[in-house]
Image 1 (tube, rainbow, N blue to C red):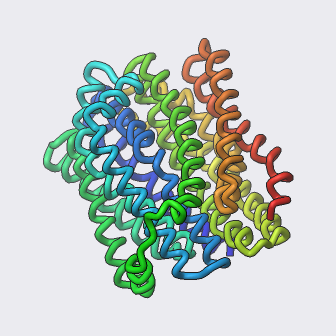
Image 2 (image 1 turned 120 degrees about the vertical axis):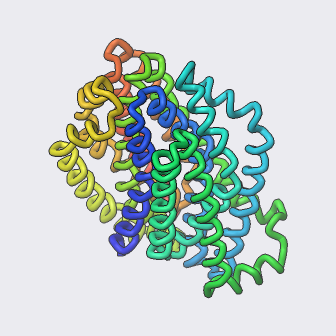
Length: 428
């Protein structure tokens, strides 16, 4: 049961990670460190701007899983419709705020001179994919909550292949440079939305979704309040996480284009690791969400233990792979010899991070599945305070200090989640 959800989620998440990694590899072929740094800045910018809205996916997944054992298909369809409504409202706000928000985020990430000029080209194009991104978050969360992982896998793999293929063609084949990366993301996101809409409305769930939409009441505050409550906490928790990640970029940018590019490569490989191990988070969201909906405390606790054990085993395999292959992998991404040397000097963190992060990734899924979102927010804030202190203390260590602080952040987050667990379990 666990692997039936986790394995497709892993493949899906890895395919997603290949976008950022693929973009870094493609611009690496251009042989220009500022352009490679600009792609990292752009990726972080949209991590802040779009990934902070990922609560639409995770919140929808947990609520859909709970409704599956509590109320049934129509209640699940109502969760999807609320997610789409909230997502499109957020997209409209983002587009209206673009003239002010985009320059602010570039300033916050420390983009300057050549790096900033290239980042503006990329970001100005990709920004307009916001409506598709938000709608896709809600739709994919709905599918995951219904355990339709094979469907999600096909959608995500096709989306990522299209994105990378377009990136290669537009950036290198047509010589569009960094603009090609932006257009490939824009086109692929809307193509994914068309495919998801056709699947949902044309499949067995289409009639239920349309029936629930015709009944109305989705936008009533009384109906939206539980959805908004869960997603408010997830939003704030993700904001804190994105600030922590943006801090890596800002502090890297202050040390020059070479350090920025090197840390950007390490960061993209961290994202790859996190998304791979997040397969177990997806399993916990669904399985623990179902047990919470059924008020099955014993089953809930058993799934926590079982998923955690499998997650630790997967983290060990990832760490072993990086221990063997880190140097050649890092060399293949570097735009210049200086970037290669700087990145390889940080390779050890690719071995440490899987062990530091896996418990927190699994427990994120547990907390989301059970809708313990307020506790999830509190543990993130506490871990961030520890992270900020570590950044201040480790500043003289340079990039090693940045990754040491980030590792401490991951460990602190899991420790705080574990400390909250006994009291939260009593609610089930």
